[in-house]
Length: 218
Image (cartoon, helix red, strand yellow):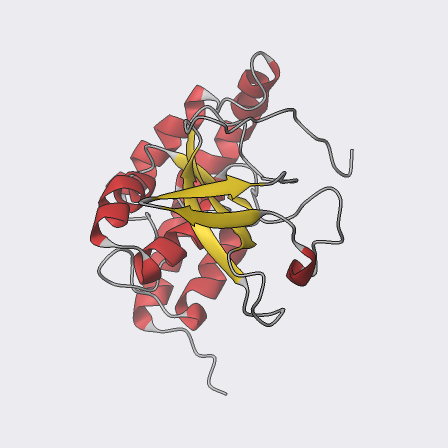
């Protein structure tokens, strides 16, 4: 396997290293200071300044392989860039709009979303204006195996009724979080690995309750 970096990847790597040295690492003390002085779910103001700087340098949405929506890099081209941003995991990935869970959610929307869904959710996510979460795991079952999921998704005329309780929806308490991709059982009669669907649920939908924050690993 040829793992030689492409010229484009090397050029982006150089720009990203400059950005990290000149802006990200120096911003780390201020980031933690601002985070400690307010809502832990609200992004520190310095992060928005870094995002503006990253965009001006062409370091934005590098994760998305679809050239219509993102940088169009292959996994081989993006991997060394992700390694660099991982050196400042709380700051750098979001500063270049390459942080989970939005990365996976944007990939789903880019590949499978309708034009209306892309316009409503993908575009503002790509612009860094909103954030999203992914709701799969549940508190009452071993939901690392999705065949155990109990949340149901039922068609009701032109609407869908989603009934269930989710767990570990990373980022749901971020004030910028506007939508969740929810996984549930849409056809209980199908084979265990063919009974699920994913549905976009705006967090402002009546009936959606974000109950509490959870801690993990301290």
